[in-house]
Image (cartoon, rainbow, N blue to C red; front, side):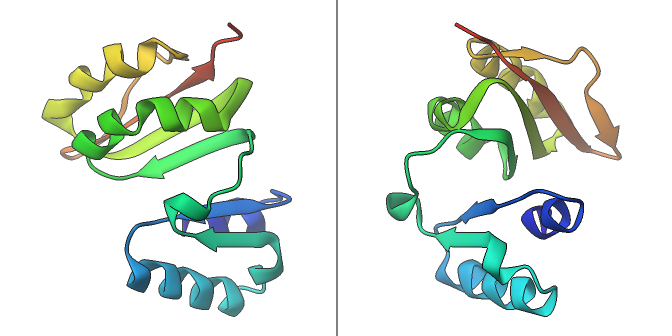
Length: 125
């Protein structure tokens, strides 16, 4: 859904990665329904091409976000944007030092009920 929204808002291409085959099938189906399938690469992590992106978004729980920090950092170009969601309010502070190694994180963590979004810019060096 995040990739489809990005494409509908003007992104040129989106890469969608998941470990769940059902999620990948649903992503392809939703992309076709929204006429953006030709602008989207949908794959398992091991098939992800070696690219850097202007924007990296992830909507998963804090544990996997912590584990994937170096991977997501490598995918984001210098000065690129990061947006992480799916974070339970009580766990957001644990992710700040993890991602702070690669990103200048925004001071404001957007909260909606018990969920948070953490965002920032990729450091140059």
